[in-house]
Length: 383
Image 1 (cartoon, one colour):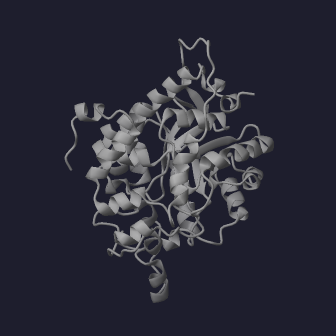
Image 2 (cartoon, one colour):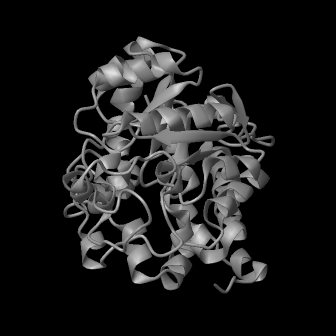
């Protein structure tokens, strides 16, 4: 894969530029997998549009000669209220995959949340970054797989667990079917493979598709390939057991309802990630800019110290500003990181992070917010 020169990356002025370059470099299958949503992709589109609906009532005549984007999340000191969201199969975008992403995060000081569907071993990712690492987790039809991943995350020094709770089954993603999505030779969900047992029989194997052993090139979407990795029988009891079984803080990822947010805190979660899986699960779910405010209010009432993160459609510093004003402590960005990886490997991811952090600082300055703590709800309502 030809890498653009750094001078070319420096000409990318915003995340939209990066996405355009990436779209020209990715093959049809990878682009469809990364970019697609579920159903008619209504939620996918609304995720981005909903942020733009929020006007920022900026403050004037504030001394912003020294503006700091630094903050703290889960006891981690961050250069900006930004984390890299869990996204799968980075080696579809670049041969170095998650290693390139993790190295870029290390240089920028931004935490990376490693997907359990990563194409690189968790331990190898942790070994190449000085930035904090969190582990994303599904509780699937084989609980021993998720239990083993939690133990590995603890041993590798991860800073937390994000349990995805919006995926009892995989969403119907038409782009994956149209492009014949499959796991190419040399690309696999290696962290799941290590622990998945062989099927008990032909019926089990048929249900699992290409779930066990090496990929057989089966196509038709991630649901057919990894149906066993999620489970429709996961309940609040499973969350409570997970929280009680690990020393790591657990965040529930995929919450959109205030009552679910309160229940997650009551079950022992250290916080929530307001998310709709990037519009890849229930098409028709609210945009995260719409659900964040009510969820944040519910979490604060249940536990003022709980963490609130959000992802979905965030593409600019002003979106980060809006998310903080709605009650988030930080945001997570997913697809832009994949676009950076496709556009230029490690340097492309670093360009994405640098662009976003610089834009957050610029927007805070223009809004009259010298610190992250000054980004309050009043920015979205003048009274």
